Image 1 (tube, rainbow, N blue to C red):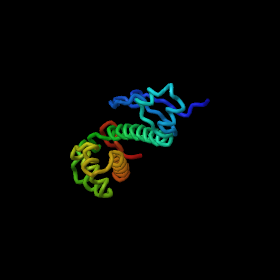
Image 2: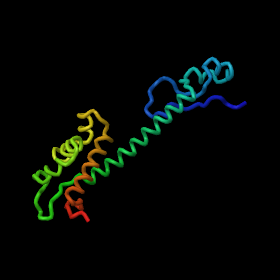
Image 3: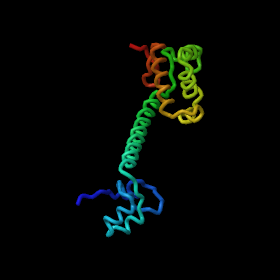
Image 4: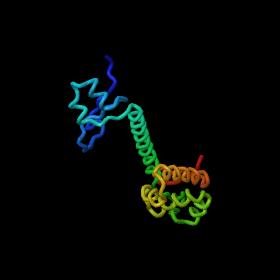
Length: 168
C-alpha cells in the first residue's frame, strides 16, 4: 500500500521551533482517517500537526521566496557597499557637499534624490530609510542603485578606488 502521508520533523524543518508538537504530517486525510488506516502510528498522530498537501506547497513556496529575497538582498547590499565611498574630483577637491553634487541630485526623481541624499550625505542606513518610508529594503536599494547609475551618466564620471574618473 502506498503511503498517503509524509512525516517531517518540526525541529529539523524549523530550527528554533519551540512548540509541543514534534512532527508535521502532510496529508489530505483527516486525523480520524489516519488513526483508522494506521493505528500502529497513533502515538505519532497525537504529537503532530497535520496539514494538507496544498498547505505544504504554499509553505514551500513561501520559504523559496524568502530565501530568494535574502539572497537578492545580500547581493544588492554588497553592490551598495562597494559604491558607498567618498568621491573626489580629479583636482582633489571634495565634492560630496558641493553645489555640483546638489545640481546633479536635482536631476533625479524625488524618491531617488531623497534616498541617495539620506544614504550618502546624511549617513542613514538603508534599513533606517526603509523603516522611515514604510517600504522594504529592496525597494530602497534598487532606488539608490538606479540613482547612482543616473548620476554617473549625468556627471560623466565613474568611481574608481575612491576617485572619480571620466566616464569612457
